[in-house]
Length: 313
Image (tube, one colour):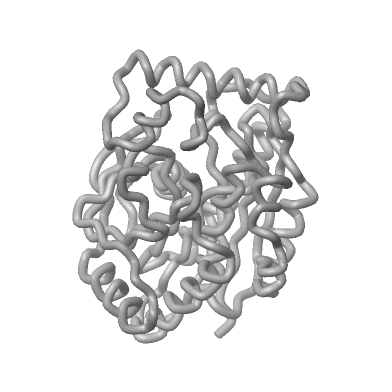
């Protein structure tokens, strides 16, 4: 029995395969994803703990928890990602929830979690679909203020998950899905249109016409960003490098010096997704980075990073 751990941080973008990029850009990205996949398969995890965001497909402002563990989860199949049941280890999820409750955390627990491409895209890239090793999905709110978790709380949560894994003799992969710098057109409660505010408040499934219009809007945003349209916040490779440096070195407390408002101002509204990496990396503990890749890809509205580290304990 092994308590070995590994960490994988991976950005996601619904625009992969939709907006055109230069051949060398696409080839480099696919090579990086293939490199991550090969390392994950070589590690051969017995359990996957995955932290990911949602984009108003499973969680809405009528009730938006900062964190939620799923004991059962279904992928909705948005943006050409697979739909269906995730292979959730309900016993491990409940045990983790109990451990967190006993040690000062109060996560929500969902018996019917819905996840979108924020989870499914990485699973598809690594395992070709949703047929994965046993999984514990943890949702982190990255879009809905004021309940976006703060950096210090994310670090502490990751450390608490790590202490739980200390009691679990299983080879575990920690995945953080999201980030890095990016600001796609995800609406907020400050939107001037009451119909938009209602859509992100009340749980609902988009009709094909409205989702099609949203898809075209996001694609156009990416192409305008690539063309240098000043209306849209550019990617911030310097911010991304600072984030990646801290995770690679293990100096996670360095990130606590970042100002929460500055994350939005400097890296974008959705850069808070990067905190999923912080949680997963903190849960991994002492680790050596074996693979790091970064590309700023405005067509995908993504400072796209991939990092794999293996525990040294």
